[in-house]
Image 1 (cartoon, rainbow, N blue to C red):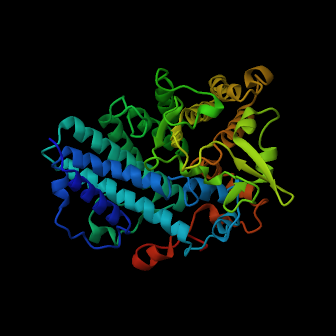
Image 2 (cartoon, one colour):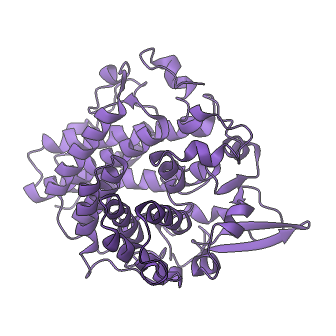
Image 3 (cartoon, helix red, strand yellow):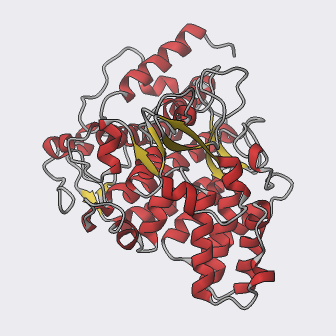
Length: 458
């Protein structure tokens, strides 16, 4: 059935406007297009889902711009330096509950959670959508909800667990424990795994399929120290050799590269916003740059990742380093780069970590050596075949650092996961306090919901 284009844009506009408000605070929407009617039309229901991805890519926690988790956690960890007052507060670990970036991340994630919950409710109750499309939409919505909660608990710890679009109930929700939310994440991902097909819905890799869900499951189980399931799910992804392959270092972040498991497509006619960190011309950086000690000391000699992914420039006699994973400015044409969210190299590192924890050192060495081989580094199986479990885990941690730097907060989260955050940052950050392992709950949320308590130390 041909859909009225004006109606589609009206629905998308309403969705966008609603998403700009904090859904746990606002009143139910009052408009002539009731949500139930949207889900009686397959094209409109799909447009609601696509609108969620558009919002995620445009700005906020998943966008890779200067208000994203990639940037914020790169600053709070030991990857980036901030060069303006807003970013310096994160770099100096002086984030306060009134910080607008933190408030924006919290609101952005919860807005996407509202969108996912509303989609699940609407699609479940629809009688006009085919079973195949219903499974696809529900599966993607469950995945989005799990993805959002993974970042919420790793940033803030215990948070409200919102599973409906009921405004009144949500506005007074207390915190749920991290363990309880992890249980929900796994439940949602297993629902998504059963609902989603092997193939991507379109030719591009910008909407989840079964492998995308399994890739996130492998990460979740790694964070939960469930080594058996972390190995199991990473292997399921790695074994899809006809779909996913390690590619050359300068080709990884191109749109739809074979290493891509899931990317977010930027707005029409634009590249990933991650290129905001690029330094051009001769002026000193105004946003962020790589820490000099990371750029000069983190990589082994002759590591080709440093050659490909770290560049430098000099301004006023000072050398600045910057990440060069993304090369295209957001406004450049043609569009060549999307924002990477999940990629194959992480799956090898997850499996290497899990195998090492399970004392399968031979298997772990094989996985980490695949990553080192691409970087043209000596292989562990040749240089240190009798390496101990502890030393191998340290090698894997170093490989994560130089492979996944500035990608979705990986360094920050893995320092926390391995209980190395305090030891690593206390000597680097003069303002560091142990309670900084969690970000503060935004002041506005504490003010509006008296059932939410502030994290310790803020």
